[in-house]
Amino acid sequence: MTGQLLLGLILSALIAGLGYWRQALSPSGVAGAILVGTLIFGFGGWIWGLLLITFFLSSSWLSHYRQADKEAMADKFAKGGRRDLGQTLANGGVGAVLALVFFQTPDPLLFAAFLGVLATVNADTWATELGILSRVGPRLITTGEPVTPGSSGGITRLGIWASVAGALLIGSVATALTQAQSLLSKHTWSLEAASYPLLAVAGGIAGALFDSLLGATVQGIYFCGRCAKETESPVHRCGQTARLVRGWQWLNNDVVNLTSSLVGGLATVLLAWLLWR
Image (cartoon, rainbow, N blue to C red; front, top):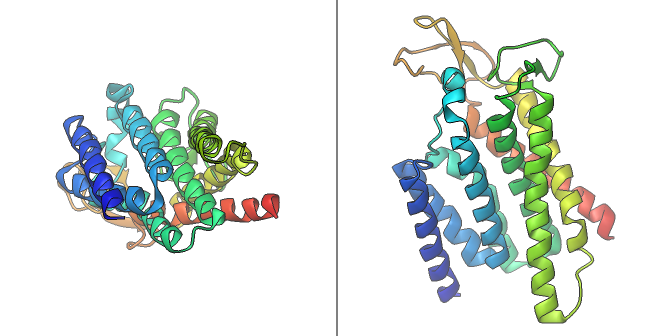
């Protein structure tokens, strides 16, 4: 067990260092990534750890994709492209807890929950990074009213398909890794693993849409009087303190991400229980 934790620490430190070098992580984000990665690798195992790496690498690459085109809308978001401690814990904290529980009770449904959590955060990241580039303007998820690109709760067709692709990537990698492990150890295919892509897409879409629903209704949204722009942050990028115009002040972007990942995990567990029983 000590050796597995040590290996997880080493691998997590290497990946976090790469993320810092690529400007995908802030210094606090490096600490968060090492903590989350060590727990997931150490207690969940190599499949859990490789799925976490799949999320981190794919989402980090997309955050730099056509970055110049996204700059005009960057001031709407609470944080920039570099993930900090809050973001790493919001995206990976639930997965780390699941890994700890799985180590004590290796129930397949716990892995299904982890699959749904990672599918949600990957789907949400892909939807944000690609949906913001849509040539067709977003509409509010609650009313269908047109909103400006980057607005909380706004969705586009491109963003929805991007979220499906992001979730499907997690499910497909999980299937490939689990089937490889099953063939090597048991010399047979895993029937449960064949359903991972479906579970990931279902849970990922449920979680990502819930994220948009919170953004459109109760997430704290602020207005910068100096720049005359809405933002998710109480302090705008210009340095001006913004005024709360709707939503709950405590419900920031990190809390929204954490909550939506829980919803995605629960949705995946429910579907897995229905399929596997």
